[in-house]
Image (spheres, one colour):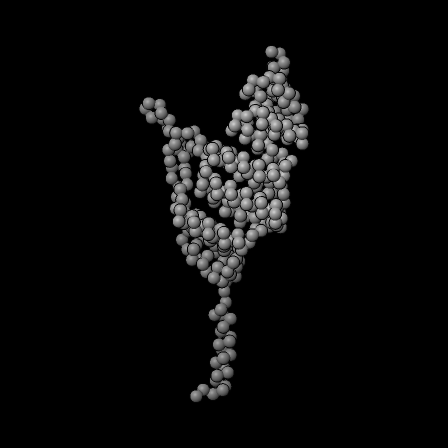
Length: 311
């Protein structure tokens, strides 16, 4: 039988060894390794998943590790291919190549992302987990919405639903939003939502145009005097619906709130020039001469006004 002294010595040695055996890497160490690996081989590169699994095992619920897991599955779900289309623009982008055959028929080549549905579903599960863990980290919500936008392309139904949910959550809960890089206030939120509105408008499909309208209108439900989204509604009726009367209603409200709003003035100019309504075009030319932000805008408006006055 071991002596009491040898037992105590053994326990002391074991106690000294325990902290070393249980010691884990610091969060900073994991972050540094992750950043190096992503820089070298991308978010779904060799060894990334193993590193993230170890990171989350040591620090369950760590925000950066959860984000890395989402980015891993999202990147892994994607495949890029060059596709041929008969349109000059696709999702608002120019073709990477344009070729004409011997008969003069032009083909437009675009780089397009395709997704593995099963892996993308894993990305969405990872996104939901990080949002549940950090519901007021607004950047995590936008990561998910951006992924949905890329996945759905010109049919952004789920992305629209997420955006509307974010807007409603902001209005009902009034969270104290956080972001690792920015101070989040109303202006930040408006600008971020507007970026999606702009993208939906650029996609120029029936579904994306409707998403543009729906998202802009939802913002106006909470911010009825926001000139950014009032201008959006004017553009919807002007460009999409060819409805000059309703477009003018929104642009007039913008100019009542902000008489020098160049977006509304320029849109009205273009609208009435297209409809050959000289009287109304001259009205907005005079406003552009007075309120134009750029010298070139004021000068070109003055020249056009002088030309119309001579006719």
